[in-house]
Length: 427
Image 1 (cartoon, helix red, strand yellow):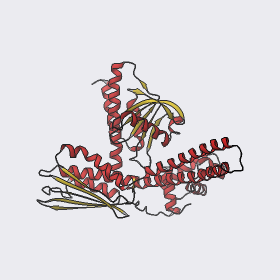
Image 2 (cartoon, rainbow, N blue to C red):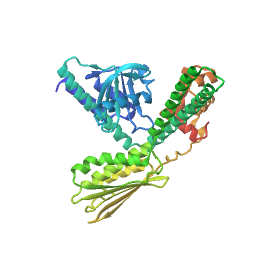
Image 3 (tube, rainbow, N blue to C red):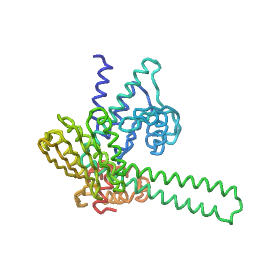
Image 4 (cartoon, one colour):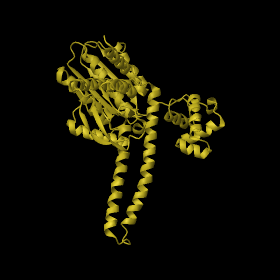
């Protein structure tokens, strides 16, 4: 085995075991021998709290927006006619500036964007490198999907907190700019203004800005939650290959179309759990029919999966036990009723609201007076520069205090610290 083979195996092993926080950096390191790039961005709606995972040039990854990634995804979808595994290459805005980019999709609908791609000059090696890039990206996308499906309660709490914070910030921006633009429209439409041409031009510009803001707000909401009917349709798409090639009749009982929207991580985990149940049931002799049903009672997603097999899959079976752990990660419940000779009936309830975090006494955090002031401003939504200005200290000092705060409260990120502060009455 030569050095390049060893490096490839190490890269594959690194991707296969990478935590979500480092997946983008691991993927970039793995792909650089096959395709150089200045920055790598992963956009996945499976992670509602952190849909972007980035590595590379800080001037790009710190400024890239969901709107830019949506435009790239639209170009990719058009080029590949919406089929999974598509590819698109061209010039587009990324991080506020135009760059040549290469975009790849995945079967899980995740998006990979490479800025300033630099392919190998040898056409033969370039073709092999392109296949390797596709393989590494597929592996990373599946790793993300797997990690989110098996997420522990702490990740789910943080994910929901991040989602809620993003909705709050976006809503504030929409309200602020909508008021400004609506005032501008009212003034420009006033009959007291005589320059019709200027008024029409300004009205058109303002109207487009309003549409853009509303679209951004809707897009953010789409990332945070998913209509129950849409989530169920995605499950049907996931199970299509099984329906087409196994000869088993997989029946779907549609949920009410007006049911409460599902938090993104609940929708994703529910699909993963049902896929696992169906595969466990198929792995029995004599199964001819599986019925899947979703419902929503306003507080819980109710899932029922039933087969007509020999009834061999009890709750103690390894495959079923793993699925039960996924359910418990969402603070849900799962019951398995086995009827020998008649099949198994699995009922799952997943709460739509996050599990409550046990309250801590703020005094137990042992924060200093200045640290508590910084935490209060952080919880109020202030950025580092604003905190520094209010407290008459430098931004580096703010960062120093934040590191100490994270350590003392047991937070791993800014968002989690804000969520913990809010849950303990710090405003």
